Structure formats: C-alpha cells, structure tokens
Amino acid sequence: MDEGGDRPTFTKFYVCFEACKKGWLEGCRKIVGLDGCFMKGLCKGQLLCAIGRDGNNQMFPIVQVENTTTWTWFIRCIQRDIQLGDGAGITIMSDMQKGLECAIQLVLPEAERRRCARHVYANWAKKWRGEERKIAFWNCARATTVPELKDKMRALADLGNGYAEKDAMGYEVEKWSKAYFNEKVNCDVVDNNLAETFNGWILEARCKSIISMLEDIRRKVMKRLVKKKQESTKWHCDVSPRVLSKLEKNKEKSFDWMAEWNGYNEYEVSSVYNGVDKHKVDMKARTCSCREWNLTGIPCPHSICTIYHQSKTP
Image 1 (tube, rainbow, N blue to C red):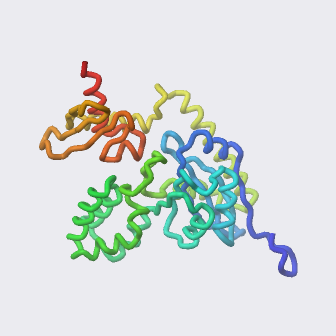
Image 2: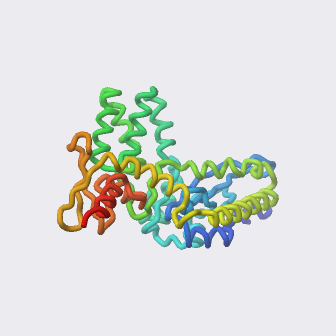
C-alpha cells in the first residue's frame, strides 16, 4: 500500500498457496522459471509468476503476484516462502529482462542463472534469419559439452562469415547453452516455455477483476494438483512416464555403442560404426563424458550400453 499521496493507493500483493509451496519443496526439481504477463481487465498491472517442474517434467505453479513496481520485492517473497537462501543449488530460468536479472543477482547471488534460449534466438534471428542458421543456433543451445559447443559454433560461424557466431556469443552463451549448465539440478531445459504456458493457461482469469482472477487461479491450480496426484497413482513403476519414455529411447540408441572396462569403475564406450567417437562412463559416480546423464539424471545411451555390458560380465 502506497500512502504517500492524498489517499492510500493499492500497489501490489503476493500469493503463495500452501499446497504449491509444500509440493515444490518436497517433490520438484530445483529450478524456477520466472515470467510476467499483463492483466487484461479493468484493473491494469502485471501478473508475475514463478513456475517449477515436477518429477514428470511438467508445469508446477509456485506463486503468483500482481506487481507494478519491482522484481526485487517479488523475488524476496519467493526466497522466503520456498527457502531459497542465497540461491546455492538453485537454478533460475528467465527471459531477457534486465531488471529481473539485476534483482536475481541482488537477492539470489549464488543461483545459477539461465536465459531462455528461445528469447535469445528471437533477438539474434532479427539479423540472422534462415532455416540453416536456425538449426545451427539450436545445435549450439543443445550442445552438452564445451568441445561440442565449439564445433557447433564453428558451423554457425560458417553461415555468417564469423559474425553470426560473435553475435550469438554476445548473449552470454554460458546462460543459454547446455554445455555450461549446472549438473546438480538434474534439469537441462534451455527455454522458459512452462512459465509462458502458465500465462496462457490463466488467460481467461487475467481478464477479470483482481479478486475474481485470484479465485479462478486458485481453483485451476487446485484442480491441476488433484488431477496430477490421481494420474500418478496409475504409474506402472516409480519412474515417471516422461522419464520412462526418454529412457526407452536411450535404450534403443545404446545398441550403437560398445563398452570396454578399464578394470576399475570406468568404461570406454565407442561407436560401433567408426570406433573414433568415444565417451568415458563412470558407473560409481554415475557420470558420462557426454554430460547427458550428469545433466538430467537419466542414463544416456553410453551409460545404458555400459549397464548391459556389466550384466553380461561374469
């Protein structure tokens, strides 16, 4: 409430549902997507939201807020409610909003900060259009190791006389390419799609007055939590359906690799086609030099090949 004028003026409020707070703390990946959208009814302002990812890699709303002043206040509220501390061990995904990035640095200095690659591409593509360049850019975003990223960047450079690569690097590639992502979060997403999906999900509510809007959002979130809880009781195992689907695809790809034991905990995994493409798998640490297993927690084709090899070794 702003009381500096002739009469008090309502400025902002913050809401965090207890069920969302508890659900994120107990069962979600430690990544938070931040985004904002405009309210469309008589009451103007911005609706800012924080969205998490559940164990099935789906949208998990955490908080909603109407805020017309600053991101810093909003992030401090989130910090308090879901116990983010200084941000250590947490990843924050956001769009290219300078005020938001400054607020994150101020309130959560130890958090890993990721920048939505889709927004980076939208800005970069204003100058570098074309399907080949688009594919090359996304190959850079999805590269999981620094050597792989350098190879993809060289391909991007060839499509723009070196300038396309320099422009892409200018958007702080460390924040939008998997090659630099923190492995502890077990989430390798490069975009902020879930936060934007949430904004579309509540589009009808955003056209109503503040109280009605909040009530609509509360009911939608409540129904979604119940629905997801009921769906989880139908799972065939402890592994979520989306993770299981990814695992099955990696199983199929594992037949393109062969493993050789080094006598300790590590294996050298080579391509059955050329024998030159190789990776190192550490079964004790549960890591692979391709970093896919490290980033997601889901065994990559190389590690699955190693698991099969172990099962056949006397």
